[in-house]
Length: 526
Image (cartoon, rainbow, N blue to C red; front, side, top):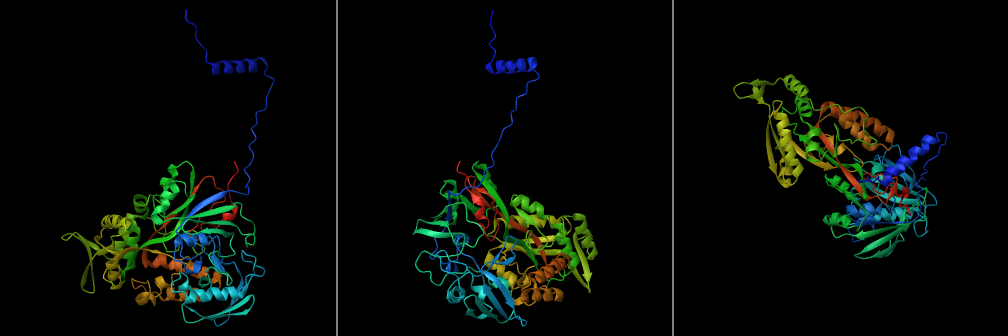
């Protein structure tokens, strides 16, 4: 006779049941106490940067170092996470009644990372450096500043000449110290440079004089110099760096790694279709409305960008302080698109199988040319989808693919009907250059859009220091864009900050400052 062997686990269960049945009145507390993980001082983060020729942020045209410089320097004015300009080193900025002069008062008792006090001389030195620089990404901000001088240690007078200008946005550049010499810069940011090893790395430690309300938890940031943009990916995968800011639409591939977290954000890369208003068909609002309803923007982003984009009816992106909270007006709707075509007076010609109408004795066909550039793989594919969408509702679309130089030549000559293009908007998201009638010949109003009310609102927004007035104006501007459709707005791309999960805390990425919440990051000792 064979004896059955009872598993040990089963014997334990039987024993527990036996005890519970014989003594039902006994209860044993089994509460598990989990201690909250609290931020602690210490730890090291490795980040990457293409080594700049200079550590002076005013003289460098490098996105990777511009990101790093946010740890070291502050400006008179900076953009917050909603891209709203806010005072940082400046205590107040006041404009005279004529609107051509501002008085800037600095905050008192701000120190550089070496202990010296910030004064007006540093601001004047910064302005001089930008003006005299052969190349500076901040040079355009000073184009309309005609003069500036220090009135005392904490007061600067600045004069503007000509139009357009936007005073607060013009002051969003980092302030550097007049007395800083050598390769070790001093700044007012949350960190300072303590070691610089050319071609290899530099090390940052918390700046005890920083203007933040609290000191950072992370005790050291090692900035490893990376050869080029293409090398960042391998540096992250091999563990040389702990974070990577990726603009690749397939950044979700990093989620396959178990030791990383991804923090997505809306970028400043905006895609749209420029419309040539010289074409009488496109000057008809009903036709523009048919285009807006007839393109399946969500499907295009999901198909070609893995959905990593935010569809929008206007160039004001979601999350911006200027964004209108009114719901986006247009969703993909074939019935609405065809209704708009009918309202425009087009009817199907049974012989040609093309929608046609007659205006002042001239026959017009619902046929348009769509051009885009060959270097952008997404646009080449999206152009075919747009063609298919629009032909499904009655348009005939001829797609032409060309290199970027030829594309811009065609646009500048107004030799196109529709152009699938994009722009990297500056943080100020100023639509003056985009829609003001004066910018048809010298700006980015390529399609030749004219609206007197739009012109007035854009001019008022340029001339004011009042964020309240600009906000009110831009609410109406967005209503005009949604109603008038000067362009076919598509979407903003999403990017992501990918971080090793050893870094905890309030990690919130945005397009203007990857390190905005650095003071709240920490690395647990465990």
